Image (tube, rainbow, N blue to C red):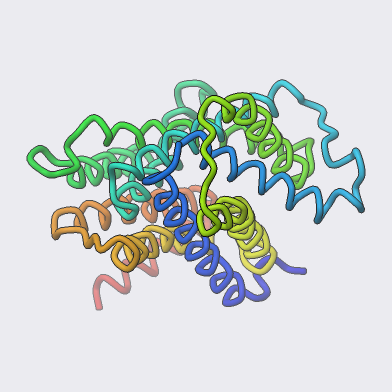
Length: 306
């Protein structure tokens, strides 16, 4: 199937993924407010690993865990565990919308890591997007606001770990199957958190127990929707719509927890979204052939004059 043959279907799926993932964060926040952080993260990975084994295990067998780069897969899994621990911990102190906006700095951190660690060429436009994104975060957690606390560093740390995770994903996608990558990352999380959870165990009631049982499945559903979206539309088409998750996170925070961001926080969130869209736009321009780039500039000049 041509990846650009049904872009509207892809956009609908990416919007649905944003809603599901924001709902997952809402469930995680609710659980983390009354239960151990270790218990919540353990349940998230254990339930995801179980669902993946039920879905893919019978057909794939042991090949579901076969990788050419076990060390990189281990590091990738540890990075994802760090993202979960930092982000869920942040949700205890920070509203979902603001925390999600900070987490979406991860693609911008990738720009910095690509330039410093991978020695890739980064354009001025991409650096401009990074600076704009950091400015948006500063507006969200501005001095004098309720968010100006050390807890604001938690989603920032999660964004950095997510950037490393995404870079490793890009590297492993050249050799390992996506299902294998997702299963191994959830397996690493399950095994690691299973070592810790006995020290933090508490028996939840039936309602919270059901939520703990499904939280990983909800997260996996969101990621499956993301994967299917890219079957119908190109990454360049869908990238700006991934930021819908921030909007859904704000709505979940308002409906479930009664938090509505103030005007300055909304401005900061808008700046972070704009920085992400700018980064996508700059990368799309850089990918155009020279002739197409000149033609694009000419068209924009005509629009400007009208």
